[in-house]
Length: 309
Image 1: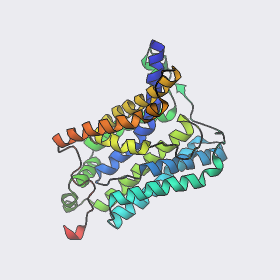
Image 2: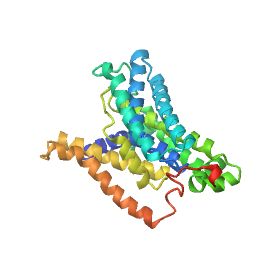
Image 3: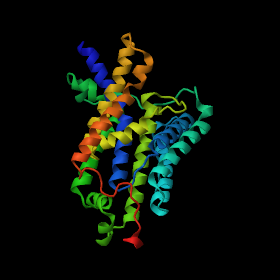
């Protein structure tokens, strides 16, 4: 029984990692006041680009760079539309999701069914991997999982204990006040929207190069939307985002384990369970956000016109 739970918790970390990368990117973008609903499309483009480059070069790290670059370009388009042209953020994000889904499906059609030449393989951290219980769960993972152990505290420290992080939060809370003290609102929003896109690309690369090494059309299966909901659940905090990503990952891992154990539950119900859970968590977290009005960035979703302030 213990080994079964260790296997489930190990799978929980693995399944939660792409959600964590995407959610961290969205935390940065939304902290700057920009809602990015294009994560799903960015993840798909990243997964396709990363897999394609890895197949051609045999280097997963080059695939990761390509994935982040491709998603970052889409994020730059989103920043140009919403920050530069002051377009509606929701409409722009939805358009990028549709565009990214179609583009990845078209360009990746020839790669369907091709085996990955190289992937990010699991390996044990010396000493830590041999710890009882915790070792197999946390320290026998792949490199991209280990990177999140560093990325989460780094982003947390950046947001709350550095001047650039304070500037970022100021832009998201009150861009007019930030502008008045000399912070370039447009540049700040551009930088963090693109940074969010880079992390969404890393999430896509994790799916196609580590979690399920392959390319399939729509292989993100709605994870981008779950990441958006996860940011609200996490109250725009990277540490809570990590806990939430593993919570969602645990639901996903549990559905596969129930199927493997032969539990007589309709397969369609098991497939929809993570999304039902997402809706339930979103309702609860939204209520908590309303009670704690300071949680959401004050200028989230609002365009800023310097001439109109």
